[in-house]
Length: 111
Length: 114
Image (cartoon, rainbow over all chains, first blue to last red; front, side, top):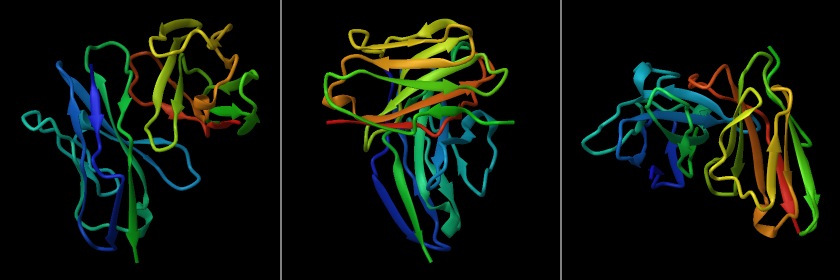
């Protein structure tokens, strides 16, 4: 069975501070990991995917298979980063993408 | 392009009543998903369609939930009869195909069962 754990329900930082949203996963096979974001009054949307290795809106995430983690990081938080962030895992079997989501972390960036 | 549409946006019903939700995916998207998001939790997949066929419904409580996508476009999700624990946001999402990783989500329907 696959499982995604986001240990923090809430993360509160000041503008300009570094941010790290934690995500740990449990899966016996080779997973694909994703981060989704939901801004206030907006729809849930994909932020980034570990395979693409991109930086989106200043955020990066590295898959650490040894620690089974996929933490989301940003060196300098902005107020517009305030949102709900969900980590998700999908089996990388070449078939369907069926994500299992974590419970989410609410990020609040204070001015 | 227009996004995923869902209706209604809000619904309040009493337990044991029935309710139906509607989803219109992005034009041309072959794959459609229904998720249940209970307050304080992440979305949980209920059912996945590829065109009008079911790919995965392993987490759909089939004694009370049903879903269909008859013409491979719009979809409806029904709960009959509803229980208090069904109170949640029901999200619909679509993607270009079964192997497309990017899902586009609708605004959701917030269901309250009293």
